[in-house]
Image (cartoon, rainbow, N blue to C red):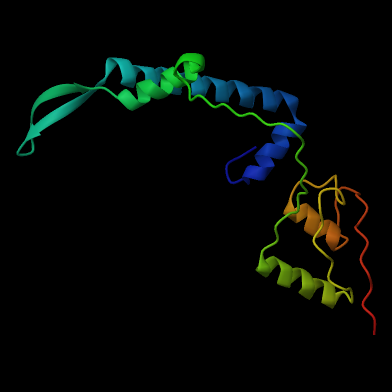
Length: 160
């Protein structure tokens, strides 16, 4: 992989090459560990800040970050310092997901469908398109062009 590649290309390469994915995970863990070390140092040991008078450094002062210390305590001792949430629910909740399509995208779908001599499709719900991963996939299936071999959603031919 080289600079200039899209982010999607890196994620695809990560998914299709396990050794690259493992190296990615190690690098990410190393970076997070270093950030955590630096955050702890800033919170508990302070940062040396120059004190100036008329543009000239006249001394230094250690500045601590109380907010950063609070966040570290929340992360490392959530049972004691974390936010307390008490959520109780009884009964069942049912809902349906639909992918939101912007008005611009809906106009585009209608234009493409019209150019193909098709009636514009209705929005697709997850239960109609269980193998989709997002609005773009739903759109491709609605218009009958899928790369993954998934069955296109049924579309009614325009009369006339």
